[in-house]
Image: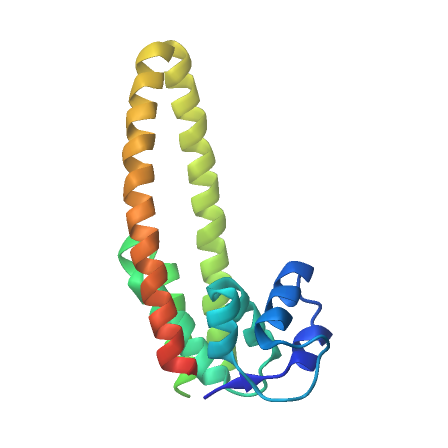
Length: 175
């Protein structure tokens, strides 16, 4: 079981709402150095706050990195640039002591370059879509609304399912 403390969390300046929610859940009014399981934070405040609190944990870098790799592997099929996949591979090897700091930094830099390239491509596609929509606004609006509704439904179902998996995996790795 991986733990932190309220004092460590407070030192990292948590958001006020999340902090107050956690204190209420623990029936406390001020921070202390009592061990606080990450699972308790997950149960009280949810996955976002539990993930944020990982920054307050000393040690366990391997477990944290492997959790991130596992999450990335779940969406690897969406990665279209091999530099992104390589970054995940190198991160996993690094966590297992099979890659160097230099290899990790090179993979990180390549993944950032892939991200910038994808952002430029998305901007170009958006510009092209805007030009197309301006040429036939009514038909474009109808199609966009239908696609947006379908995408929103798929995204909502996928996010809910994926979020459950992430929470279960968090419990398994850090509980």
